[in-house]
Length: 64
Image 1: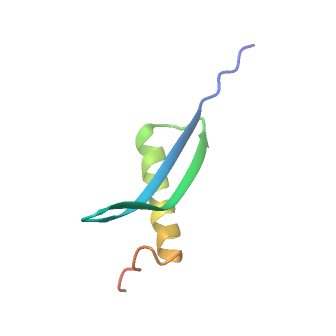
Image 2: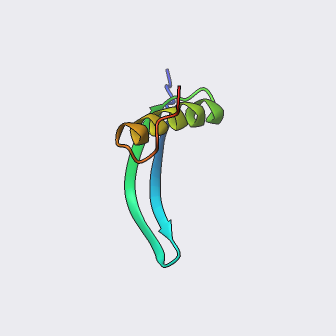
């Protein structure tokens, strides 16, 4: 039998942008195996990246 597997790798970069230029302040990569859809991968990845950036205090945590 034949098995076909998909692996999707996404690299996310966050830059601090100023009038004089930009600086890379965070980068992350993720691997997803056999994703159901692109939207599924993107939605899950956005949640993970935002949580990580909040944990590192790059993004402010939302007021609750």
